Image 1 (cartoon, rainbow, N blue to C red):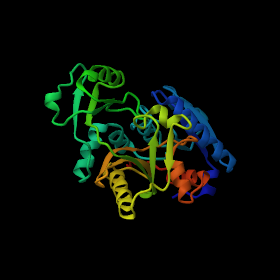
Image 2: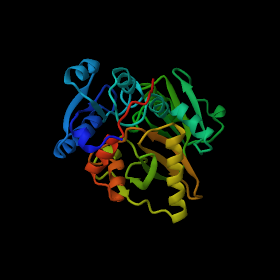
Image 3: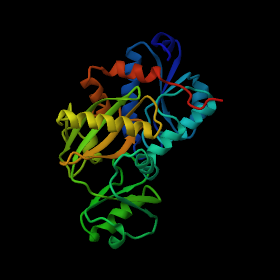
Length: 311
């Protein structure tokens, strides 16, 4: 693992912005990361990612990439593959783990293979209607694009009459859509750092669920750390978070989203391989809750930067 002194002799490119529906959130994450790294004496450069990224990386002479992108073309393995080709070490997970985590369908398969619980679901392709009789589980259901984050395009559908509008919304973002059984449960997020769960936080949104507005609008969700769970259940949530991270082959850090039922069952929703780094983001809040300030968190992530494909 590279030392901070060695890293301060290199140019760090903070990649943010990008081409996804989460561009604005990524710009905020990137700005927070860049500001903190500069304040600690790093030679950090903020790069707003577009389709000219290969030239921008080459022209700027970046030695290491800190990826603060969210969503497609940044969190899905695309940028990771480019960095592998260019030989630029980068933070976070590699190509395969990033692609798996971003695709909710394949991620669910990996979770199930690892013995983890997921909500019952069906997959619909563009133009395919939702047939309630073929679902195998009752309403309400959750309709979501298979490859978006930050709850973009997600709807809770309480009855079949609401399904057409929900599908239309989800299909704007993807050709494949997940229809999941709605599970009434507490929303628990587990932070994983250095491939081990460090803590769990509970989210209590003011909206019906932890949607885009609740995630990025001050006052729209209450964050409770540590999550107020019985000791045994808290440890179980941490264990499941670690297992989910490892089931996808993730590297260094992630945030694992769980649903915890009154019967103490833990369902894995997804793994975020590049969790937000904004002022309202959960991962830095979890780290701070266990005594890891933002700057130290970034240094630990940065020190793990590497190429994951070895020739």
